[in-house]
Length: 313
Image 1 (cartoon, one colour):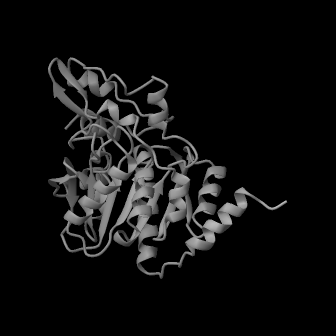
Image 2 (image 1 turned 120 degrees about the vertical axis):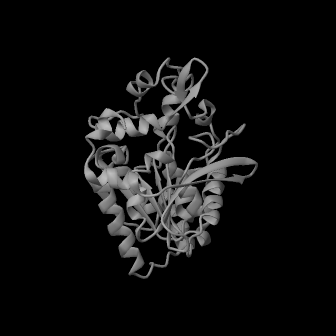
Image 3 (image 1 turned 45 degrees about the vertical axis):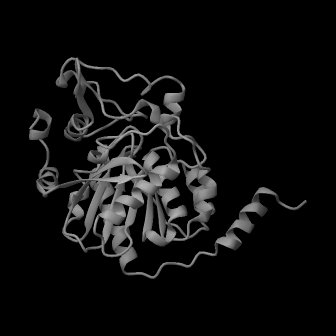
């Protein structure tokens, strides 16, 4: 165990001690790798990482649900230990989420939880496969703005030409997030960094495919209006979903989705306030299990949204 991780709290070490399964399936001709915890034939949770991230951004939190759920975290194509594609699109990533969910052994439709770019993937999954999932949780994914990782790549600042570092410790020390934030838990950053690298000729480099930041994008706001399953939005005090963006997303979802703010958290809330995120997710999901979903009238909502865009004189 790395030096940073020897000082990790008990909850973190407990999560990493939960037995982990690794699986690989094929979705549309590409190998998709995922991690799993908990017994099969239980209610399911699917965790979806952000851009340039991987399943291990969840592997210190997801196992803490394993006493009650079958839990999985996947590597989207172009990320982690999954295969690469010639082109990437949100619709394709959503199909990978469903492929993993079908393979994982859930009892009933799972709740899909996605962060940042993974939140956009979750939106598309909920829009395209409403009858295949039990709910969608969107974590600080600012609909009406580009993914932060994509925006940075298009400016030529990050990701496009990943470096090769001569040794592992140097590579770990260079690990950064986009966007940056003021605070991170050092033991989590060390853990995630070590699981984001692969050995290549000459040293170590990042696992993600640099081509993945120019994918075709569906229009997220249109996708929001198509969602009929349960959905919730998490925003953070220092994140990307501002109060105005949160209000816009709330309107597009028909004013029935809870909007939950995590205080003191940045965009990468699992890296700085993991237990706040854990508590929020547990509370939300427990509430969903003991309540009846509110029926959405998507046809009327679409009419209302068009009227809002084109008000009468």
